[in-house]
Length: 65
Image 1 (cartoon, rainbow, N blue to C red):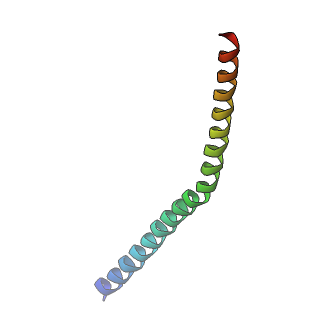
Image 2 (spheres, rainbow, N blue to C red; image 1 turned 30 degrees about the vertical axis):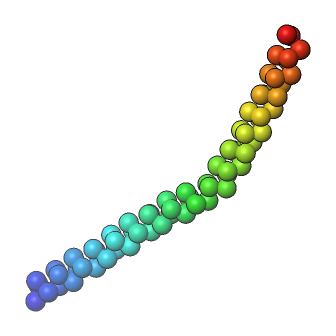
């Protein structure tokens, strides 16, 4: 009888641990997907700044020569 109760307790603990791990993984995946729009916006802002910098360099270089 004690072995059956021990087995049930171990199975319940394993299910709780598995649920906690799955919950953690889903949270991490959710954070990654939530940050994708932010990364795209940062990339676009960086591209605009880089393009503006290249235009300024082109204009100042052509005026010097």
